Length: 292
Length: 216
Image 1 (tube, each protein chain N blue to C red):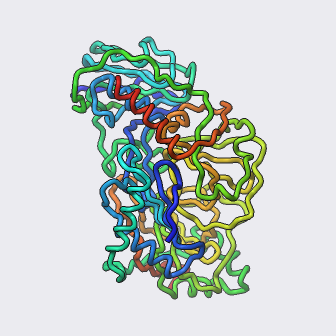
Image 2: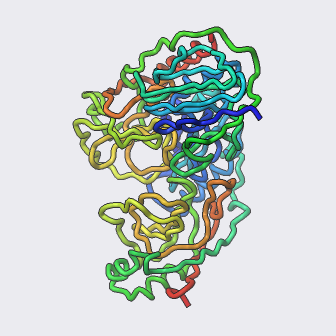
Image 3: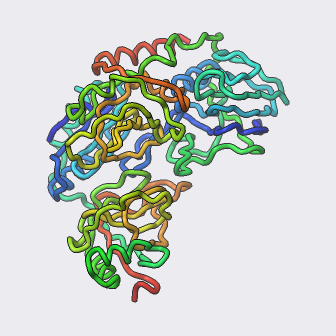
């Protein structure tokens, strides 16, 4: 079998695709790539279906040995590998792709032509680290089989996406927006160390707790919820499916990838947009992707 | 019924701001009506609302709102067909139910009476959510309504049987949690390596059965 061997796993490396949909009514959130734009671009560059399973590395990347000749693409943030980013590259049999600590954002993806053939859980190859659905983070010595997700020839090398990683997070109004003033939009927020794939915890000038009382309700990916301490939490790919904290805003779909690139101690801010503007932003990212 | 955008890829369908049998039935009906509908990627039912997620590249909010209204109009009024009774064996108290004594003290009842009350009724699974297959059970006897812990525990064991205000629930997986733990079931509510549906589903009835030293 054509395999990749994990020599060094890195800080937190897991197999991800675009997520596990259709199980939220059982309390199972989608999971999937934290930076879906990078995963999709990487897959398109190596000629895969865009939902093929690949490796997601976080803050510190790993080292991976290829048993046979392979075509790979590194996308997302620069983890100091000896390969250009955003380009399909050949790796010879016995070759090693070695990544180190990030030089930019939080996540880097290693996509392999053919995709990773791992057992699917509930229809998806993605790892839900918090619950163990779909497996666990990689360890040294793990072997991953390369699959048959290639659907066309590799693409020409691309540049990085023309969208800034550090721009403010665009948000639409959340279900309890009328309970809040403009405090969310006033200052800068710092990403706390304890942030993870469940949620990004932000630190800043506390937002006054709203007076309203609410029932637990369904929560969407990117929901900005404000617990009583006034420090917002942005619900991320492994978020709970229901929650009882009020939500002034929700990050737009076009900026989900930015959430995946925020590191602990990064500063960020929020910018309010309409649903129509959010959809126009989404079209821009989709157009860039399909021009690859 | 109120429908509004919750994000650029979801609508929140709301049936009021109170927990009631009517709202619960409306949520079940809506969830059943939308299950498997083309264009919908996820449904998040809760006490009195359903969050409906879709892919905004293929559908507008307006289209999905129309779909929701059409589906609910066509949905049968009657109860969901498969209301199953699930019996949950529970070891009450001791290390498996560290808050049993406190709950008893809070209500000035002997622990044995708390166990009797908790296992005397049939609960309804209002919905399943939070973090992986957590069943929210309606029907806790009013005598047992107990506030949450002031500070959540960092670690609650899988299978912990818990109460909080007027709700009852079971933790399917080990997680942090602020509910009062009065016992633990040896049943596995959710197996990460398996496939849902989980053991306990929306619309089921649940009865707790005391086992071991805390029981018969």
